[in-house]
Amino acid sequence: MDVLFVVVDSLRAHPFSDGRVAPTPFLDSLERRAVSFSRAYATECWTLPSHASIFTGLMPSDHGAHFQHMAYDRSAPTLADVLSARGYATELATRNFVFDGTIPGINRGFDRRSRILRQRRGWDLTPWFLAATKPRFRRHVRNTGFFHPDHQSSRAFLGEFARTLLPADDLLLEYAVERMGANRRVGARSFLFVNLYDVHAPYAPRDDSLLRPWRAPGGIVENVSTPFALSRLGQHRYLRADFALPAFVRSILAERYRAAVARMDAKLAHFFERLVASNLLDDAMVIVTSDHGEGFGEHGLFLHDASVFETHLHVPLWIMVPGRAPGRVEDVVSTRHLYDLVAGVASGDTAPSILDAEFRARHPVAFAQHYRYPHLRDVMPQYTFNRFAAVGRTAKLVTCGGRPFLVDLHSDPGEQKATPISWTDGMSAVLDGGASARVGASVAKDALRYATAVDSG
Image (tube, rainbow, N blue to C red; front, side, top):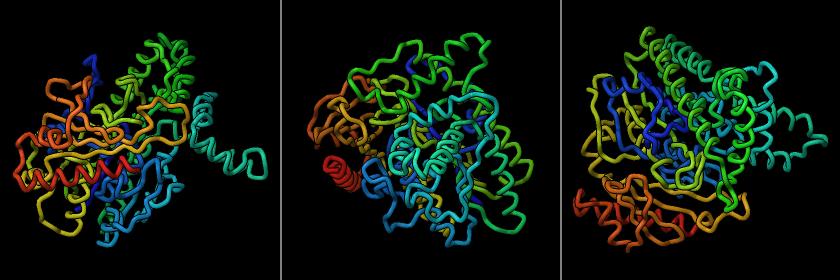
């Protein structure tokens, strides 16, 4: 069957502390149309390593595509490798600059890589301002030499980098319908991986600008304060002790995010209507998920970095398979195990997958690792360490600097208290008697290996 894999970048599943949510009637309707996973977890808190885990089924310490290495150069095949070898037309479509071809190996196996960008209109210079303040862009400038013979290519890079911040997912979803239809007409099976970016910072309030209309209520305050706040956040300044963001700015950012989620929901509704009308879902598996969540001051963190908190790891996940009844799964699952599901579909393998209770019983704990951002000086001491997390049904074991802590997710869902604990007692609490002795031993062995890898990384 065809495989349509949709990642809504930065779509968090963990609720806001104020309980306010964006209206998402389409995503809510997937509860009745798909297998819905209420406890799905990413393996990392930002785009590159999380996607690499989906593409390979590996943890960040094994695939290496994280802040300490920034490349996928391992031998394990990617999903695109596997499906391409099986005759699928493989394509990655997005405007996300993580997939612009500058990070080695992350696009490996895709026959096509399509970048859908919106043309700039008007005089909104905010995208260019935000792009120029990005650490990645500044490193690119230092390496290529802005204002010397490479000036023109550097300026072109800035222009394209800035355009990635302008909403374009409506264009991308229209393109996805066309590509699936074109492959179907020539008898080719599709593996279309779509990364949607409109929910990502800067949470644009409309499709043609990062600014709210100046005459809208609060428009002046938002348009003046937001670019400067986002530029500071984009530079990871929140990892420093002297960082502060006014409460009203935090509220503006959260409202922009909720509005972006609502607009994304409407775009997805139209997209699926087009797919159904074109009969493109009759023989297609559809996966809708996210690569990580997003922070708005929880634990002092913003955007997505330096975290193994639920805010960043807990993501939504829906899977639609022809002939498979919808339902709700409460078990803990990891998005890296989507690799086994998709690879199995491509090869005709009927072995249990994330959709099956037998598979989930063998993998009752979701692991996560975070490799720290190395390009910022003077960060607070707690952000000089890599981190590991093992998430169970009711508890989470976290290590920072080699020290294990336990969080009771049942009584402390906001993760306000982490209690020092021995490794053995911590793993016992995470497993919570919900696994056989053999599975428990296997999980504990894997957990120790992954924790050791980040502590020594």
